[in-house]
Image 1 (tube, rainbow, N blue to C red):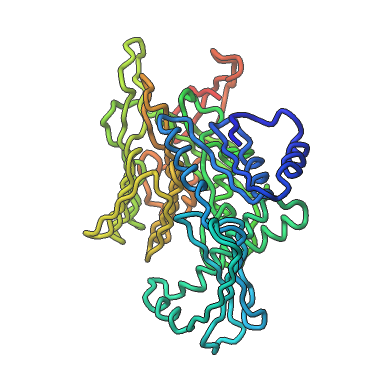
Image 2: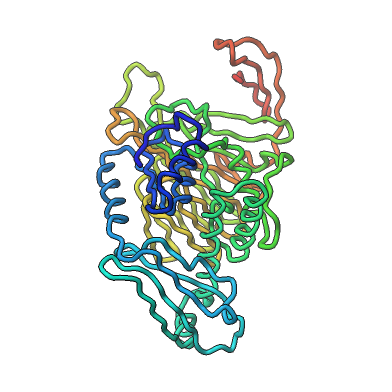
Length: 464
């Protein structure tokens, strides 16, 4: 099913009619074209009917995306595949029955031995082939073959982590169609495993999107996140990064905006001032090519710089040219680590060793002193050592846009972890600041009053 819009009748009615029409005979594949679809609903309905959902992005390669999806599911090799194990030997088994096995795909089942000293495993594989009748194959495997893999794996516990990964994936899939207490239990179980095994999941990571009030919205092509505003997701991320492995997850209203500082847009600085329950915003008017020192902390060794880019052509009528961040660099000189980000690529340098990624990658990289998470075509999360954490957001515009081009936004979290010696355009505000607002009066825009602000012994005219 291909759709580019919202359901035009009740969702429950659609689900019931579809399920009745299919009667379990066929899988349902839902393709959501563009950004106006209710993707969660499409995914839920597909999973109920043993299929899957995909979002097709409306771009020049949309036809290739559709072709790729068709190639993925059009050639089932086996149907109704089951892998069965002795019930008295294996516990905590992951999903072991599969409606379809496609050409080029794989089936992986994991579980726990009840007896750790067991040296063999019997598996019974059943299924139906496209060109053959029902088959039943029983095989015996030596456990020692798996232990060799364990020794070669970089983390040393590959098999156990694979089991955890598959279990989490299965719980999240079941959670989509669940409701009420069942959904809460599935969420809690998936979250506990995610934290215990340090996996990035929808429950332990998120995507930062632009504020709805962002001035230059035309042509922005961020993937939509239903029902979340920017400060909610920033607080959510901070709460995740501060949790220990055994703690419970909660995003509560008592969390403040403390430590969240934003550089985005034209470059638009937003400095939260929690003691005032307010924020200070300002712009920097520099020419394209200028490099701005955003953060410099000599104690933690963290430095953040940003290089400005402009629009594709200059608007001769504008007094000030619009500029944005086209390159961001974050370094920690104590760890000899450096991250360079552009709208095209992401490069991490550890000493003399360089590793490159693109925004088409989905990556979770953890090593001593470094955590890097890349959310494909959306954002990345970076933490170096014990200092502050950073989120870089990719803002994409229409490739053939006559004026605008892709740019980056920077969000600094946990800024309280930087030292009091921190300076820079953004870093100077990492210390507690105070300001006074006087003489509030109507401005040029009736909805945005002007006032006088006194901050750092300077008297400024400001606009709400």
